[in-house]
Length: 216
Picture 1 (tube, helix red, strand yellow):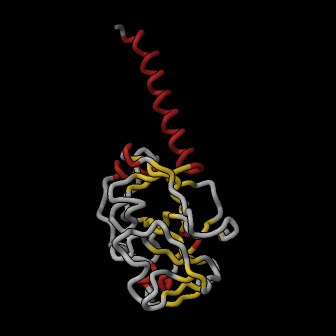
Picture 2 (cartoon, helix red, strand yellow):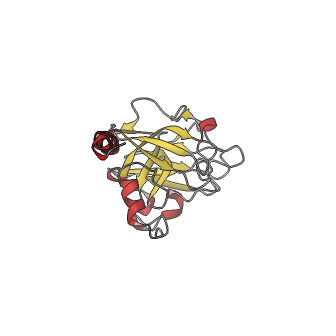
Picture 3 (cartoon, one colour):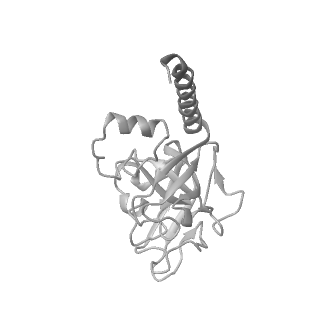
């Protein structure tokens, strides 16, 4: 093939690549991002290695939502250095973000809620009412310690589904934010597990509250 004949094909390939990059940027900025779950803290809902799709088009958070949020309170160790190429690929949304700058937990307390656990009880209470949590790991209790907190305005109280393997709001009381996370740090709710294929499923907060129990 001559150089003149090859130029239109190369131009077409370049346009396709540009279109893919633009689409990735639009999706990342406006619609959805993907993240890799790094640990067992959300089992059985999410396992280590699962890839999840997080919606960016909602401005509300409901009790029971599994959310991804930015670690602005220092819950995680400092991430390892990454190459400029890998940073660019993740920025464009062409590779899922890892769990070294974000966390995935379930929303248990909304602004104004009182969340508590009484010794000997097999459940948590929200505003004095036992909370149904069908998503909990079968081998883990609802909580491993007694506590009572009132969620401040603009904040959330978040826990893992595997309570004995999750380092969450309970463990960061007394630290930055006193265990609460800011609504401003929320990337969005996890809508689905998208990889591996045999783990594909929608993710919701069934059994955790009503449609009116939400924060905006």
